[in-house]
Amino acid sequence: EVQLVESGGGLVQPGGSLRLSCAASGFPFSTSWMTWVRQAPGKGLEWVANIKPDGSDQNYVDSVKGRFTISRDNAKNSLYLQMNSLRAEDTAVYYCARDKRAARDYWGQGTLVTVSS
Amino acid sequence: QSALTQPASVSGSPGQSITISCTGTSSDVGGYNSVSWYQQHPGKAPKLMIYEVSNRPSGVSDRFSGSKSGSTASLTISGLQAEDEADYYCSSYTISGTHVFGTGTKVTVL
Image 1 (cartoon, rainbow over the protein chains, first blue to last red):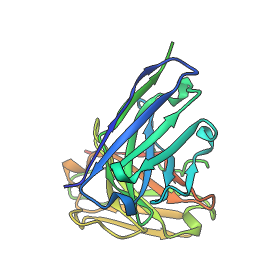
Image 2: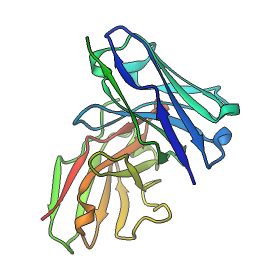
Image 3: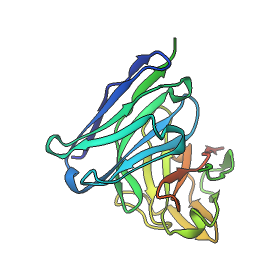
């Protein structure tokens, strides 16, 4: 059974940092593109970033470039999102998902990040 | 990286068919056959319904179908059922090597 379990969300002050983790199981993680998607409260989905299976290539939405870093540890079947210089507009549920054929076929349950003073 | 344009809401009666549009540009929807559709019920994670414009993942009802013409993709739900009431999002690969979602459509079963 495929499982994606996010963790690391919480309350952080503006300008602060947070590291999200996603533990994967049930599929060949080391050969899968992986993605982070977020959803602000009451709003739509926003694609955030993705990473190549070997970690050598990453892509980001413009609004997080230079502030967020996606990474992975294939030995631990884990995906990460390091978020720095957080802003109120980064408040959202963050989902990790597996990419297959340019679509996200498996999703985690999400972790809530709240940026507020 | 502007969001793809979807109607805010679409409604239909049980048994009817409805179609949700997803309009982009030649730099995303129009340039690639990498359009996917997601269903999201309140408080739940999204679920993949269609990938590569018109392909259904295993386990997704054949009442769901996808198509594309130019820079507009469409999701059709036939034989509308109460359980289809949810938010639906399209997504496309873009010329920048990123992906973009649509604005989302709330489907109401009357």
